[in-house]
Image (cartoon, rainbow, N blue to C red; front, side, top):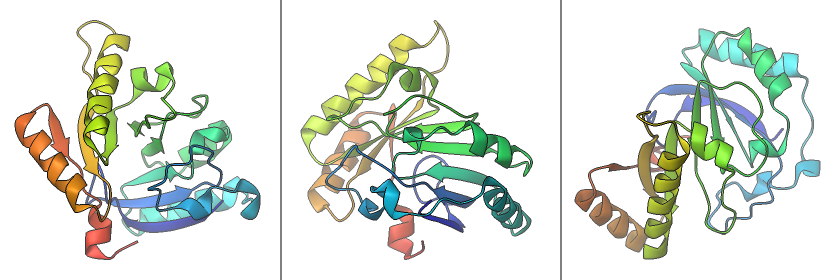
Length: 203
């Protein structure tokens, strides 16, 4: 367990909403632009009782949190059934943020899938995600985003709604921002996601 905190969701479709975050340790995806590399070594972080996490989530709910976000690291590198069961008593919707690497576990009300070209996601996550959010650093990432969107559509039942499609430029990269803005302007199926918590200077 890396940390827990109550803040605003900074990214994606739920950006700007009050949320309680549980950041799990452990990730072997190894994205070079990752801003939480300290979460990668699982053994460097302590384990926490599930009851304590549920109590913290309950306190955050009383303070205004609208949902709980399980993030990392890569949370699917750990079994999440027990954590989700413990949090169910809090009564808040559970959101998962994942790259899609690992076996799906736990019960979630919203899944944000942020796939990476060097470690493509499992088909099960593409078929289940509510939000497909692709980080962009170059034009190649835009092609990857379209490929992931097409695969997500192919894996879903006929006539079912696909995931929300978001392009997110890598933080502090002006060329990536320009690329993402131009792409979304020309491709109305996609929307722009920004790391608004960084612009605001909040956790």
